[in-house]
Length: 142
View 1: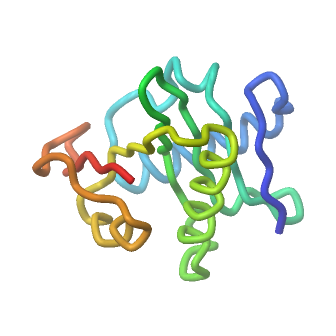
View 2 (view 1 turned 120 degrees about the vertical axis):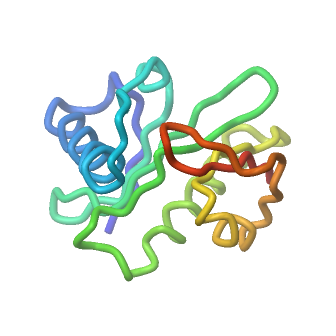
């Protein structure tokens, strides 16, 4: 399994479609989201994904902001769950952020049910639970 890190311009059309498919299947179909998953950040962020035999297994994206770095859209494709790939992609994402943006604060908007998962990496809740796209979320910071 290989970690790939690319800007939008570096992604092939096939890779873009695979990323979109994984995100739509996870956040729109499985979770019943009613929002446009693709946004302005997709043009400027770094796309990270674990790939094996041309199949995306896990994905996240890194967004640099003026005062912090965020990552999000964390997912593991359904047929590859229960293999600790969520932990692996988050670990690799944090490592990449620390390497590229040393000293910058890392922030996330986490689905509330994953609070303990992110706390295991050292994240601390920065807000109460709130609804975001009809799904409970919480702001967290490392």
